[in-house]
Image (cartoon, rainbow, N blue to C red; front, side, top):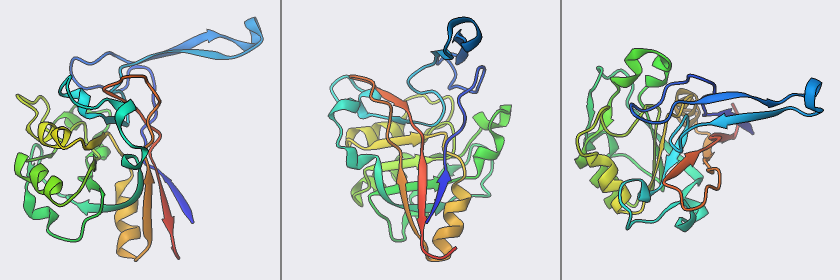
Length: 215
């Protein structure tokens, strides 16, 4: 069994979606002065590797508290969308193979994390989101800033997925390792459990994959 970290570190000044709160982390207490080390953390609910609840798009949809934990943990299928041009649309044709309840889309865009190029990422089309929902997928993750373009006019992929009470995970990293494991016939399970923010639209996660079988 092997564990793979799929999360970006949360640090001061890290990339955030345009308009979201900036991230600041600084000492609030120190062991030398106060006897303990405690950080003061300021960030948005969509900071870093995070999940969106349907409530993110519509007040009438479920928030994090109302979603079953099974949305965040389980066997995952990773789809290879690497090699696309900046801003490319990912259509339904990529999702014709066998899928599970959790689908991760590996664009390779996490390589641009921390650079201006990260904002010009590939994204799902509305048609691709509809196909995923129709095939029973209720958790969709991507190694990019959003499943929609940045910036987006109406968040079409978000609206389809959230309307189906699906969970969206964004800013994942390391999905290439999962593709390699999958190609080698290893079982892949992921855990993307969010911080339990009451009534929240989303929350940061420590996303981890467990690879079973021989490496």
